[in-house]
Amino acid sequence: METAARFLIVAGLLLVLAGVLAYGFAKLGIGRLPGDLVWRRGRTTVYVPLASMLLLSVLLTLLLNLLVRR
Image 1 (tube, rainbow, N blue to C red):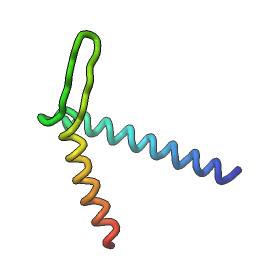
Image 2: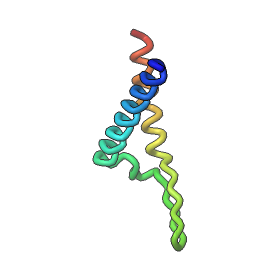
Image 3: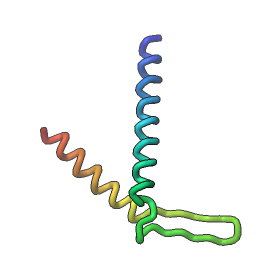
Image 4: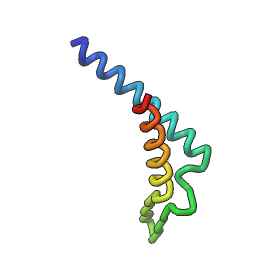
């Protein structure tokens, strides 16, 4: 039972961290970069954040490389 409790605590903390990061990225304008594609037709909107995904991928790659090399 302790293992399940620890898992739920860690999962909850990760969700809170993801929410804080998403809020911070929205304030910085990430998610609305010039390379992000938006199609609107009637009541349907399709959003493809290409530039945001590339930027996030590069940043996470650099961060993980720095952490792994230490």
